[in-house]
Length: 367
Image (tube, rainbow, N blue to C red):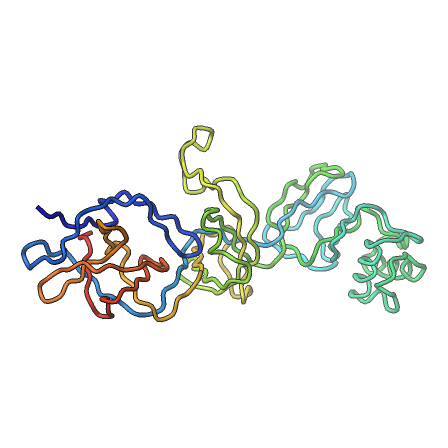
């Protein structure tokens, strides 16, 4: 007695290993393939149309909305903390970050940290940064920001800056007077409270840049779906969507236990697949108003194939002679048609075959 081909998904032991939007199906269970079944004699429980259109290999992943460039801001000198910028506040150039013994530590822009006092005769990139900031604030007219030497003109500009803040006009900048950062900073949280004595090198604030970003992790096996520069769509809380771009795809990260995977404490439970860190920037970050650390959904575009025939993935059959097919249903009859598989995406698979046409109906298992 002839046996019908088995549905590929469900009763078959199949493994889909997706890479770059294509799938390889291994170890399929083979079954005899009947060429035709009449109505009432084995028609599939449901059908779906063969569609022609664009097919995307994109996928959706869960991420977290945050801010760029998180870092700890350490105290520059000893003393008692007398004021700290509020959590969530934004600090711009020359703004106060915190105060020690009543003296403000102010933000200046630059990539080199404030690692030493700055005074006449000093040379280096940190001196250039100081000059650029003094010039931007209007105190350093005539300074050459490309000259890394702390000149007499630099000292004069520093005195003007100090006078504006009613500080002692020494013409020198102490290590505890300013903190350099890449741009405006947002205070994520305080690591010390008013009245504490943090001491040099101890964290006072956790700060970030003000640019909104999304971070997520993706299985290393699917990392090819996330490339720097690729466009993405981010669904924010409340159903609002925003467009963005993949900014970076980092190295392998530890397995993500945010979804409650069991055994995270050392028992081998949960999702132990290798993960890759990915960050996304927004095209219009000022329009993203959701709270920090909000959960979001990121839709990766992946590869798109234009004008291809596709069927639901669960319409596939493993044919007894090898390869794959679908069960075409026409005029109350069902027949198997061999197909070649292309790209997988969004629950569908690209198929090609001489006997397959747009608008045909193929059998699928009843879900």
